[in-house]
Image 1 (tube, rainbow, N blue to C red):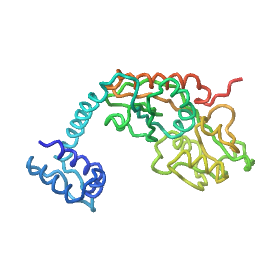
Image 2 (cartoon, rainbow, N blue to C red; image 1 turned 120 degrees about the horizontal axis):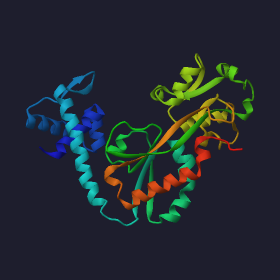
Image 3 (tube, rainbow, N blue to C red; image 1 turned 60 degrees about the vertical axis):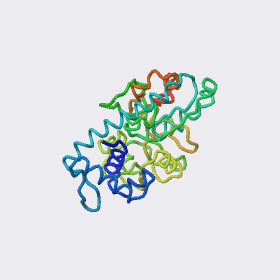
Image 4 (cartoon, rainbow, N blue to C red; image 1 turned 180 degrees about the horizontal axis):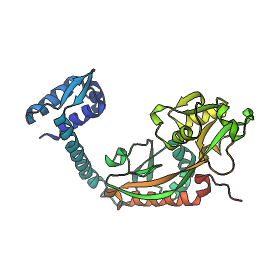
Length: 295
């Protein structure tokens, strides 16, 4: 079996089309077609069938896909084991987290980071997909939900508080009984599973939604402009000029923040020490993160 053929198979399975796979692999579509045909012929199986213009895995294809992903992780582990052999505190550390944590907590403290790690370059990815850690596309992740599976080292960082915010210029209908009548801005259907959207569904119904978005930064901007009220993490909402909480001094709800590292990386000095720096950063900014306002 040729590992390069496996890469083409995985690209088609994930992208759903030959053109998407070609774009991901930076080759032309003819090359993708030729490589997947060679892969199927080598194994004497059909891996895909076409359905509504998309490449859909056959039953055998699904079985091969699970093994191919495991093979991919092993190949990546070999590659990174070689690159991680350098124990010096230098190189790139890839950190993935939701954008509100990156923009409101971590980036403002990067001068302190570079005081401690002058030769380490931090690379941020605003993403919430745990496969970024599994495939080693990121070294450290901060997640607002504890992963249920994976080859990961997981530790709790703290709690992230959320409250309802509005623009100063919209100082009307501030009582909880009036929240139902306010214009709202919310996340879109792609994020209907997150805790903030679940809270809205469970506590308020038939809201007048003026705008939806998949971005916390866009949601904050909409609230600031007066497009409506919305739920934001307190570490973001409390820092925005012209915006204030209307749900009281205590957070409306909490989500747990988890620090995640791939097991193969825990002994890499620059990764381990960056993780420790992040833990200390959260500990020092506990009230900022959880939204509690101490007396």
